[in-house]
Image (cartoon, rainbow, N blue to C red; front, side, top):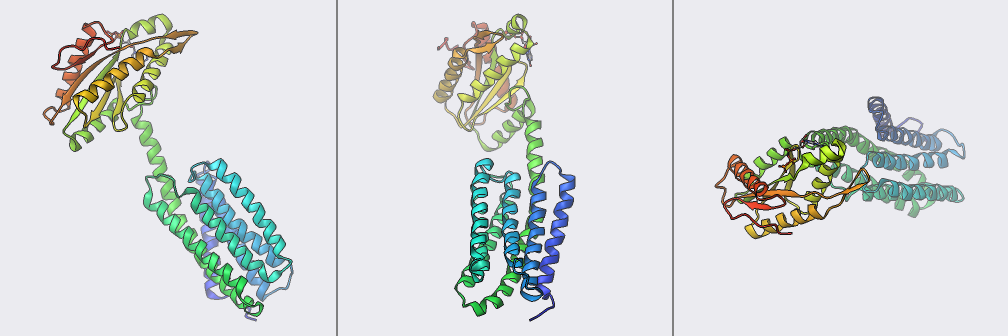
Length: 388
Ligand SMILES: Nc1nc2c(ncn2[C@@H]2O[C@H](COP(=O)(O)OP(=O)(O)OP(=O)(O)O)[C@@H](O)[C@H]2O)c(=O)[nH]1
């Protein structure tokens, strides 16, 4: 029996331990992200399980060492899933976690049962680990993300690890008992090396994903109007720029709540805020997927509608006018009813830049206000009578 720790096993165990320490350090700096702690546990348990297995086959004959090592290895995969789940990589974290918890308990029972036939223990554990890794991969494969490359790399590593575990499991279960011992050693080495690959890549990928997530969060905060949750003026103008560079045909709605000052004066500023929120929701409910709503300031909103023709734009403006007028907004035990006026301007072939489109839509808006409010005015067209 070889008593010296093979080089591959030693490297893999020590690198897993190093990654474990690295995640523990990250956990200290990101206390609000428990994923790091679970990942550290996963690496630690992997090293512990693998070195216990090695010891059980080469150093001691303590009967419980192999089952305990198998439990540590299986738990390492479980921690890996929980870490990813807490990192919000899955679509419905609570539901997924419940299902995996059940699978984990069943797995522990299966490991316990296979101690009756000790030669099946390693094989069963391998298969259970492969299944858990595949379930983990399956849990977040449908997730949409901006960090596509990072997530794809993570998925590939998970799948490779699962495939290795599966093959090892099948080999261990189908080989005669006398070859099992030899295979067990190979198993420990391959398993450790694939897990090392996985922990190394996730050690690089996870902090990168964390950074991307924070960036997205800050960007969203900077671009959103705090009260109404639509784009703020700056972000809206950025969208206009972007749209101008990709489309020629666009339309702008300028929308202003009628007699909004009266609402503030009669019901208070907070009631006014509720009205602003309701109107913003109503605008968003009546536009197309690619249209963009922004709050330009006060009670003035704008909607940019790219690639739209006259008839469709008019229909959307009518829907908005009707939708807002039909809305009953609960405010201070009252149900308020507000209306908006809409000014519309088109740039059919890119003939108008933003300034000219804005001033045309703004003039149309004043026309709608002058015409009696709750109206749509289209620039260069006769005033549209109240449609609703
Ligand atoms: N509650 C609330 N009020 C705001 C906010 N921003 C601006 N206002 C108020 O919106 C009101 C705008 O009033 P005006 O520009 O006179 O227009 P209006 O009363 O809507 O009248 P018309 O536009 O002519 O129909 C002012 O009283 C502002 O104080 C806000 O964030 N919350």
